[in-house]
Image (cartoon, rainbow, N blue to C red):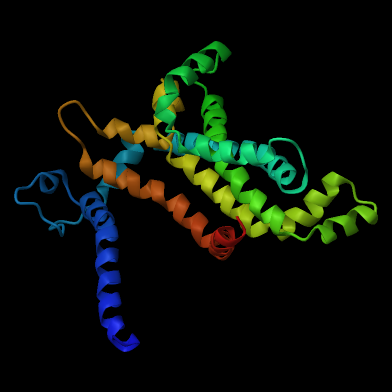
Length: 275
């Protein structure tokens, strides 16, 4: 089979996969633009008969959506900063320094990444309670930071390792300290990998649900993922509100991707080779 004929097989396959992946988004958009009576209509209407945008105004007026967004941003931003403060020096140490058990530590990072957080959620609840951090956003920052740290170190150390040591040695000879070498030389060169790590950490914290459900009890301190749970009642689900709020929750992530798309693509492709 020549290359021209394979195109007739590859393109339909790609289109089919894209349709499958995008179908949930189509259902979300269709549902958030429907009035309540159309949401539960039988048979269902894939295309809304009566487009309505009042679902968006309702969720802003009836629910503290602004507080949910603010809390999610605090948790995601705080987790990213906390992760970077630990990840950068740890990745540098693994990439540049020699010490006993370094290879074992790298494999241990992978093992930690394989564990599901639900396995240790009860132990974490006891620790958070002992620290007096229940119903505190700081508990989410710390737990999300810890659970994203292993992959972040693994990814970023590959970028630091790919940078020639001669560049760092030249900076040390010129009088730079070790810290100045990291901040002025290594970090700018490894920026695509750093951006990838930041995006991974931010989105993981933004989408996290289980820790928020376990540690946060106050309505005003709920992040957005836990706030969406308000639309799920005991007897019914307000699908039109839930889909509208979920759509709004996607907007910050999409904007973030659009801003740093180039660096993110470079980081992902480079990490696959350098890691």
